[in-house]
Length: 76
Length: 166
Image (cartoon, rainbow over all chains, first blue to last red; front, side, top):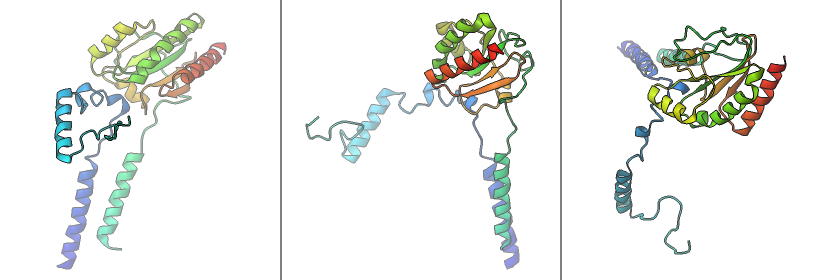
């Protein structure tokens, strides 16, 4: 019984490795046209970006904490 | 060693080998055919025989590729009378984007479109842009990866002068 279980485990591992292995694909440098498309940018919609930032700052209580700038000390 | 461990290690090794084995692409010493026919290029493709040719692979979505165009135009204008030519092969998948850039830039040299990406696949380039400087006999003498501004322009000038003098 133990031997059968071991064999099944071995084959399952092999099948899983092959299944995940063939899922890997290499995108050639000349095929990156779609990846560099404007629609692939996460910040392409300015209104949505502002809204998302607003939600995050409200939730995290971190208004003004994005990017470079002052931390509220008034020294910049 | 347990059998499952053996099988797993063998499978991992096999998969690693598959990813490492790659056919060789273009490089220094590769002889190109006198014409680039057979790769279904769209647009004018000049004869390469007897001329020093810069074969450049570019795309309209690739900023460094576009940055190289003014310098390539200068090189072409400087050396075209001595037997130098440029074949700037576009690998754009969207022909209208390629055309928009060409209409704006208006290069004097040939800009065929590798719509099926057959030629660039044969060249097996690893970065965009990539260019290959071919001598009068049709042999690649220099391969350039990427565009590094003034440095690339100076290297190309030096290499073109050398090949034209041969």
